[in-house]
Length: 411
Image (cartoon, rainbow, N blue to C red):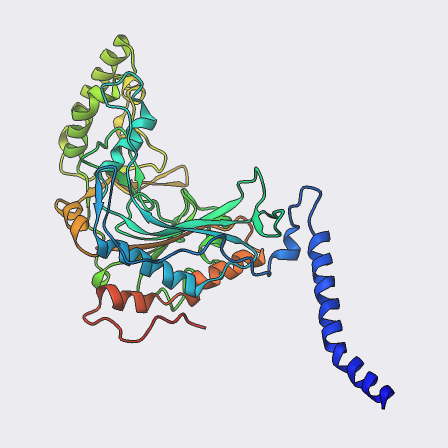
């Protein structure tokens, strides 16, 4: 009887013993996969669910007023809603997530009269011209270690991460600011887009590989929405508008462009010497003369064009302004196609509408992966492209009737 009872007891203990044994193996395995600094070898964690560093707390939404901006309770509530949809669709695997609710709150900068007001200060100052943008954003860390409490954390001193965001009314993320043309009340920018049919600018094989990564280019889940690879910022962008209407941006004419150069000249010239300023004035006069017959045409710029007093200084009577100030999108020269992008600004009244009403458009964006073959990035991209339920969000925000059922991602 005793032997029989002992046998039963031993048999009952076997599952627990095996479980403890495998837990021990798992702990030893993860411990040995870290290097001397505690960072984990990628191949051992690329399919391991690392999750989020913190849990976002969704409380009763209240208005936010800060840095001269006011966001309504409804806008804060929508930020929480966007965050909950994404967090219920995606759990970071092979990457460590750090989410944050987001509102665009332009920084306080030096006054334009300050001697130290430079390009960087102007760039931040001009964010005041942007509309209310709000949603969720965060980092997904690629290099991780474990803390003393055995929690995963970004490896110290390592900045290998990709960023993601989902925001209403975002321009900053999809438009590259032309700083000296812009001001705190008017934002000028370009949008760079990869076009597989164009050869020349951004035509390397790796751009095509990025564009087609995990079926981003042709996903049935994205076909209703404008989606593109930004080859300059190296981001995947999906843009949602009601009835798929164009974004409320206007192209800038040559006449408006010249007017902005004249209006912003004094600010551009602040850090320059007197002789440079006088010569730059002559350069501006040459632009006006050479573009005299093109005032109604639209301006197209190279992806890396930023105007400064130096650019105007370098224009003289021998210069051909049309070599860099384009009025067409492409130019063929010696078998190479140079691609230029429309200079844009926000339509009148849109900023005001964005301050009080619901989303006018929504941008969903993630960075191009550091390593296309890494399991964590494959998992992220598959969730972003194929699992996230964009149709539900469209119906919720822009549909005639909000869906009655709860949000569910695709399987």
